[in-house]
Amino acid sequence: MTIYDNFTSEPMAIALISVFILGLLLLIPSLYLLMRLFLFDANYVQGKREKQH
Amino acid sequence: MSYEVLGITVLWVFLFGYLIVASIDFGAGFFSFYSSITGKRHLIHNIIERYLSPVWEVTNVFLVFFFVGIVGFFPDTAYYYGTALLVPGSIAIILLAIRGAYYAFNSYGTRSKTIYMFLYGASGLLIPASLSTVLTISEGGYIEVDSGGKVTFLFSKLFTSTYSWTVVLLAIVSVLYISAMFLAYYADRAKDRNAFEVVRKYALVWSGPTILSSLLVFFAIRNHNPEHFEQMLNLAWMFVASFICFLIAVYLVWSKKRLGLSFLFVMLQFGFAFFGLVPDICLMFCIRI
Image (cartoon, rainbow over all chains, first blue to last red; front, side, top):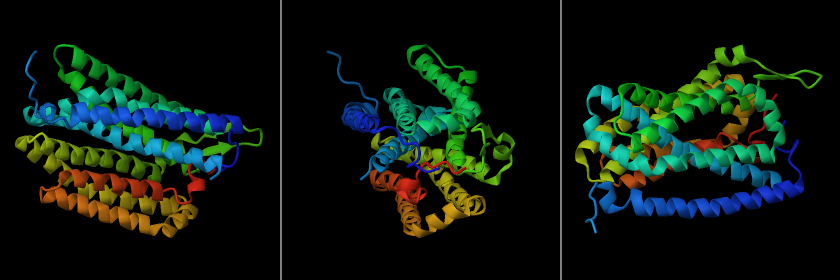
């Protein structure tokens, strides 16, 4: 059995592919923001807290 | 490009994303537990916590995408895998729930107990082991379909085959390796020398076993599915490239410089191996029965 057997119907395939690509477009910028704001933020990684306002 | 190829490519990309992100998460959990036994927890606890607390809620997005995708694109896989994955899949989901609970209690609660730490650390190794059976089963020989279309899963065969155990070994070892390599990079970014020395040692210790267990998998595939092995040999350059990336990554960690680049090479190493394992892109995820 290969991927060409029992593939889903064409409308479903188009819908899935477009939704997945939209999902990626949402996921990648959000991961980027997560990294920018937290993970690799110079103050955050070193455990320094910004001054309390 | 046909819809089939496009679909499987999307799925494979998500699975690769999950492989990297989840490995870091699982391995970090194990190292966190391990360091608390060996009394080094105070050294590396901070960087692990700082990395995991914003990330753990994101990790499983990749897995959910993959599941929805594979059932959506290839409805029949649900039919075959439904029987086969009943046990390992349920175990993995229960363990993921335990992990999620640990994160929630640990970040919003007060203090952590050793028993929770143990469950958390153990789930970090058991989840990849149980999830890796998906790839083992896709290699074929573990599912039987009779003339009436009834699917039987050869449970004892899966448990006694060398191939499935080598894959489990590779899954566990590479989780620890990926995670240690990432944490080394992260500790370096945090300019935390003490933590860096500890995780650098973990990374170097687990690098050798990673290569050894991937060699074991190669030999096991040759015995288990010679046809697939032949196709993999046609893509031998990808595995050579993967090995070169491995050498560069380990060298950079060894010499303690350019650690970001080093982790990039770790990702390339697994990318080459991952996409090379499935030789013809159109044959990806075929269940060989």
